[in-house]
Length: 195
Image 1 (cartoon, rainbow, N blue to C red):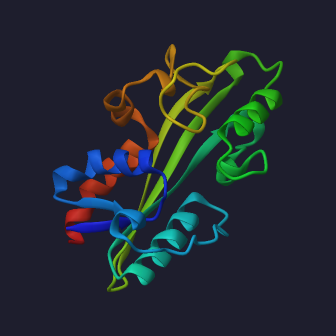
Image 2: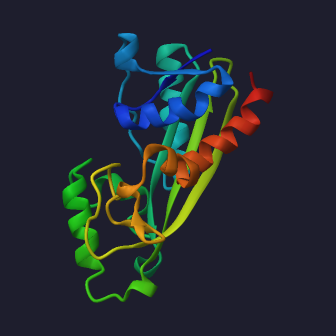
């Protein structure tokens, strides 16, 4: 079964494909299918709302089941920031370096034990017949003092799980514990009832 994924992020698409392929689901971006999707405006106040907005829009425009996620970082000592604004925390959408720099600046002087955080991911699948489902996954960690590692994207070089950053994990190691991996595994449990 073919699902369209409402993202241009090839790394995110590959991550979802690795986890969903055992269900017989092929995940493709609009670019891969040769179609154009409108970038849905993320006006929700929660990760769940934004995931739904993107999945609904992608499904209506493509006529295919659409999978979309909204994910971000919540830092406890910052009252949950950056939250739903994670991708545009420093102003420009998707500027990982600026976002990481802003986060480090805001945490300047905060001791490691108080830098608790979690990655949250909500995944929504919207079907052409109007049915949809939303699942949530999370991964607990801490924010390091400097970027470490060459892998991953976004806040991965700062997000510490144990003594390594997410950017130091292999794809398989990250899939096993990540917020997106946890959300997609939850999706894999409930999705067969919708197919």
